[in-house]
Image (cartoon, rainbow, N blue to C red; front, side, top):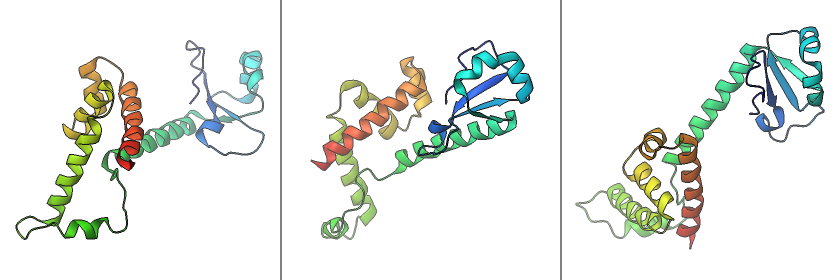
Length: 175
């Protein structure tokens, strides 16, 4: 979201609708979140907001709903990434694994051990920062916030690093 550049002005917020709604068509690209009317906006900020015309006006409640939606989407995306099978399903893979099981060891335990070993091996091939953060996140179970606190950086930096590491891991594993 594009936040209002003038941090001292708390009377409105500007949102890029193209960012919020990728693939959006139509002439309106911006939304102004405010409790002011169109007349009050024009009176106080007409010059400032002229570069964003045409725009739509949203109430603060609508803006908060939009922010809450984005936070939930990000949370669910991170959860999906964290719990998604990095290798995906390949026809024939499960059948191959079934041939190596013993009666003493359940199937999912063996698959989990194989997957964990492959993941650790792939993580070891990452650059040092990504390797450290992935081990803390995937193997030690620390949250992005906890890793950020340990390293003295922002949670967004940790998230970006882990996402980039996932892209590399997919490439490493597909080789």
